[in-house]
Length: 318
Ligand SMILES: [Zn+2]
Image 1: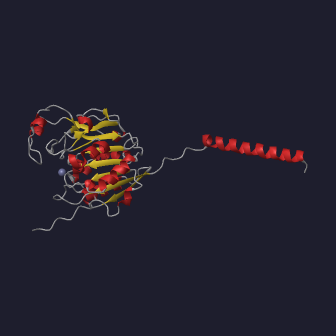
Image 2 (image 1 turned 30 degrees about the vertical axis):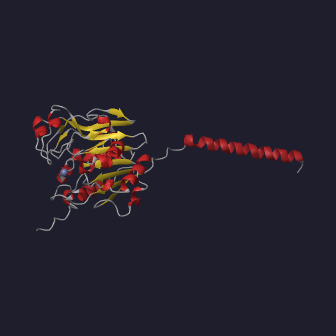
Image 3 (image 1 turned 90 degrees about the horizontal axis):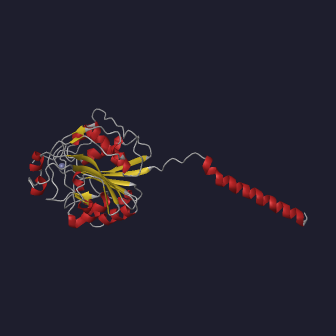
């Protein structure tokens, strides 16, 4: 092979390599779109603490997990009876939702745990807190809860009456997709300590966090007058806001790219049998991971016996 032939050969190789590159570069345009990554949700149920059919965190979490089984793009796992023994279950989660007792003994606030969750939040992991899990002692984790989920229950500032709000209108938000107006009695806490001290009943942008109220209703004057579950109240600042709409569920989108939500209902286990009540929470569980909520919301049907499954054992009689 003379020099000219070698040159031609090199040119041919070069041209065919270029053609290959072009073909490679153009390939994605004609390739089918990649399905979205499967998101991982971890549901954490708290320990038993109340009489039967109240604060049934273990049964509630298993019921919700079952209802999420067929949601495309989502896999859910759950942990029972409090913080997991091996918390590496959180390490590749896209969303973590706590349905447990809170206040001064909030399990997420214990040494080492708050820091772990805070690190995950800064990586964009979604966080949800349901019922008592929305309450923390401000000095212990108030700042974190405002940054993680937009607010928290504060003792003597928030209140916890048992009442029956009518949720008539919903925002244009994925969590509300397919949800019809509903009325249901629960221990619906309100007057949360929200980020920036906003009232929480309208959308707002505070400290680069986009806040959207999801479940909003106006408590009657009787509800504001109490009694609350504990302490019985009434608190003058709650009474003074007569006529004001209050948020019992809200959602945030954080600057770290993660999402958060708070839901103050969930005291009575039997409420999970209500299709709208269940759907709006199921939607939130999907949304908080970054997955798409189905257009008509998460469809689920309870089979006979589902609501009675996995209830905590009755405490021994004394
Ligand atoms: Zn309760």
